[in-house]
Amino acid sequence: MKPVDVLLAIAVAAIWGMGFIVAKAAMSHFSPILLMALRFTLTALCLIWFFRPPWHLFRQLFWISLISAALQYSLTFNGVRGIDASTAALLVQLEVPFGLLLAWLVLGDRISLRQALGICIAFGGALLIIGEPRLRGDLIYAFMVIAGAFTWAVGQIMIKQLGNLGGFRLISGVAVFATPQLYIASLLLENDHLHQIRTASVDAWGAVIYLGLVMTALAYAIWYHLLGRYSVNQVMPFLLLLPVTSVFGGIFFLGESLTLKIALGGCLAIFGVAMITIQRFRLPARRPV
Image (cartoon, rainbow, N blue to C red; front, side):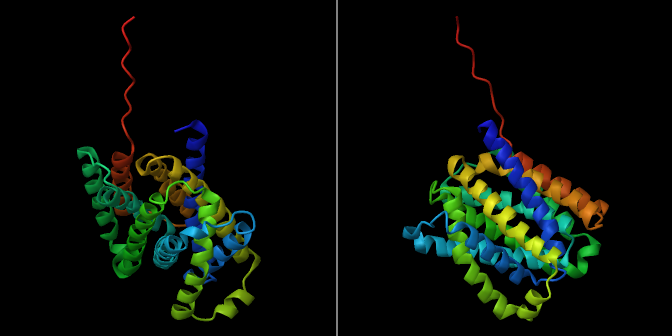
């Protein structure tokens, strides 16, 4: 990867990591799906004027938006509402082994023995996390986050099959389709929408702006740009920085704490993901003079 693309990938991981913290704070006022609907509304309104969605891919965009945005965010952030943002960010790391397994099944990517071991370690770490006694009454939320990680990985494989369409055009199309999907889901599953909107504080709207413009419009456009230029397994390693950002953000901004079991499970999950995604590079052999 080019150095500038490496820096962009690091920036995306940090932005997404802080997104868990911002969203967790915002859900003290907004219900999760409504928050995501407002987020994608802002993204769509800002991007569609400058980046026309690829309308010839209407059908593909509809399904990609439904799976990788509407369904994924409904699951993930309903889960985040019930558990610590830092714990959720650790469980979200399962999107990497899920992504690798799906890339193997759908795209024909090879899985090395080292990567297979990493998958086992990552899932072992997740099992350790959900075995934490503190989560005993909140397992449904933890499994929502895990299900969200799986649907996110499915969406990335679908996006990868589209080729390189341009990050901003792609996220513009996803936002346009995901917005009504999320509003419909919110109307069916949540209540008091108008009251939440009318009584929202400046901080709550600031969170919507961060989620809509920074975390979605900017970060996802960069991510899709990188995904179009490089293989899934080249880009995925940078997501290792996401839980690190979320854990420190949760401790410093939300007053969260990690138990030894969750910390150990998180370390195992991150280590397993590192084994999966960090490739070994060998210097080319020198030619004889």
